[in-house]
Length: 194
Image 1 (cartoon, rainbow, N blue to C red):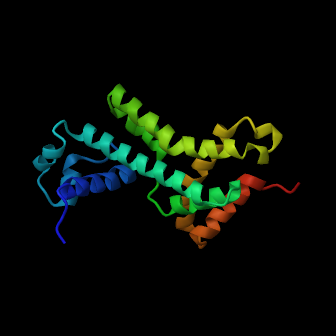
Image 2: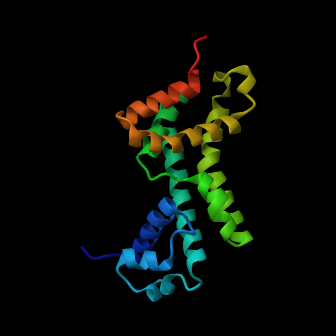
């Protein structure tokens, strides 16, 4: 089976994605990426002549667009109720590398040019946050009256909770599915007896 012409670029993007999403922009150097690929650092400039910032931006935009596409697909395939949609989405997300969205916004974006930072911040919203916000807005009639006008707050809180599951599962003994079920119960029903 022959490799496609873009396979070296795709391999570069895949490797950079793994490093940037797991360690962050400032913690990853072009030398790190070249070493992971087994190539010379100068070879990276063939695909990204402007350097690390452009590689980071393309990598993260690609990563975020993949998330958006998958979130929309999973929500469309789920049963038409909030809990089923959330279950589909979170089971997929928990099996992906964490986005580390807060780290990206607080640590990575300030290191970029304002234009590039704004581009990524917009993509974080449209590809990661907005689909979840839209889901809670779609099913707002299922929410408590006091929260029906807050789908963004609920969506953001829910996404933050998903990010924390990566740490929780590291120290626990529950399967991904069990953790997801408990998170959904916590978000939808709360922890206090009524």
